[in-house]
Image (tube, rainbow, N blue to C red):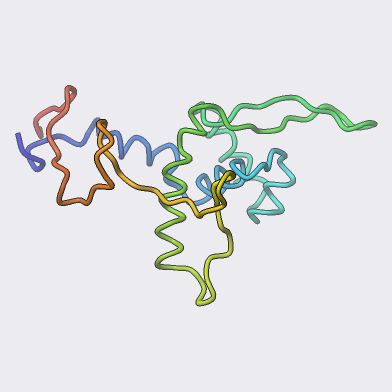
Amino acid sequence: MNWLETSTENCTVQRTLELVGEKWSLLLIRDAMNGVRRFDDFRRHVGLSEAVLADRLRKLVAAGILETAAYREPGSRTRREYRLTRKGWDLWPAMIALKQWGDRYTADPEGPPLEVRHSDCGEPLRAVIVCAEDHGPLTPRQARTHPGPSARPQG
């Protein structure tokens, strides 16, 4: 079965994009990865309406990417903050890859607005593809796509 003969109904890329492929969702995940936790901070930093923010946060919580925790400022009511789950943090390599692509193709002439560096040596991070045996970095020509265990014929 080749690619065009394979159904995309259960494609994991498609399913992932259904969860996080919308612009605002990715920006909320980016901010959560950078320590933003509270609704008002997300709204102020990302710049979207309360209704859209509430909807996206609700969807990310329902997907298990974010979880909520109660907090209370002195003299205020109890509120919820948002924290990445392990499932959310597992998106970190993809976010680094998106940032790397954006730094190369969309950054201002003077460079990217944000750098992510290794905390030990101080060098910039970069996303690379390696195989399970640590061969790499690999190029697209060194990879082959094959039907997986849940592959179904195009119907």
